[in-house]
Picture 1 (tube, rainbow, N blue to C red):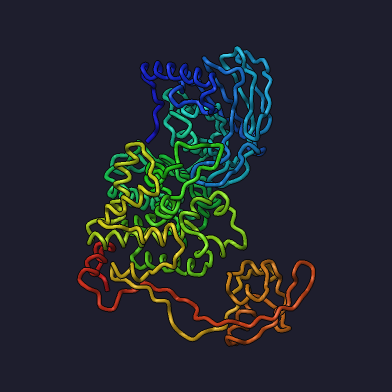
Picture 2: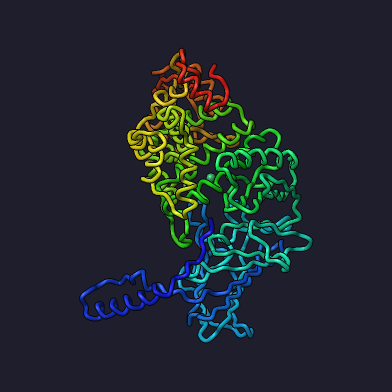
Length: 619
Ligand SMILES: [Zn+2]
């Protein structure tokens, strides 16, 4: 769903000019005071021709060398080149400009041009009278994450948003990228090749360019077709993976995506896999995956969850886009309240696709939900922050959690995944099994993505209600916009399931999240309301003794096992540099043990809806 540059018809230009003249006149007479230019005057100057060359002649220095040629019939007197401050999919200002060094600017004949920085990410070049300018700079690339760059003697991985500058106000301009690999390395990216030019690729605009990372190395590769479309893995780094098996299982995931939407909306798809680092980032027709080299046997299903997650994003967020997420503003935060669906919904569908593909069982699917419920119910922050608020504040909170996050935040992934599951169940129940969250996604794809429209939170709720055939306002008010405790059983019963919390005697409860590093036992976080929090323990306190006994995590846990609710214990701690004793009266609680099980006497309707959801019989 790439945006084309809009050509303004001639009558619009004329009308614009006329309007502009009127506006100027009105303005001159002082009857209208505004700094805003009317939208209709937007004149389309000829777009610049942009070509980048990315070299990596000295991998050990971690410096990627960029040459940017800008040929422009309407070159401004002062040409401004800008470095993005973030990359879509990872909602944090990362200030990529801080890695830029050795900047220079010349004209086509090689004469130096004067330049200056005018803000943190803008390089302004005196380009008066020039048709072509050539900027060169290096980018320090020594951080392997899916949203940064790394160059070393093993490979180069780069995100174009963290490497390539754009000319101000020209994000719709097309460009080419030529890669000069080190030694015998090969280059892989989702961008189409420029025929007849080695290692040269074309992007039709900056949203596409910045959505197409590169891997350059002596990678291993495997290709496979699904529904006639080529898919390819390139893998850098050794590990205990079986590439044939990965290709076979990935093909099953792709097939499930195809079944759901009825088409694969790309010409080809590239999986870039590094066996160092961790995590994934979604792109238009590619994804960057990082997974531990020795995790492909014991944690293979986790790997396939990662694959399914990033792959499903090609629909949910890359094409089905919430309000602010594309076309992007690369210099500022792009706020949306919908990450709970864009991310949480994708997290939910990673399990759904893998269950439908036979990669995980219904039991494994439900166990994952139980784990999420446990995590959410242990977070006092669930009463502070709603899913929409957590989405909106991702920029300042999600990527910067501190020790108090447990008390004032929730994850739009974890709670989002749960609420999307419950929403799916609710739509199925309300529509008597006729519709599901699949239909919501298909509608968003057909009526929004394909028509190049982004959806708002209101659109989303309305579409869910259309599918459910009833108002879901109560659900959205409580669980999406609000912070009410989730009534799991009221919803799960729709498909014949219920949540049990476990039973047993109350055990002594301290309520401190501790971490042991070597000999040091320290307080990592304190959930609000727990005895430790209420009675004066602080995060970062180092616990050295319990009732006069040397403290360690194992000792403390067996010590507490022998205590009863209401017993007092004395913790000796270092707080900063001073030692002190803290007396704590232990609380009591039944440690929750969440299980999702069948209801006692399921009705025929519950049995039918369970069957249509899981494809197996309710037992
Ligand atoms: Zn995601």
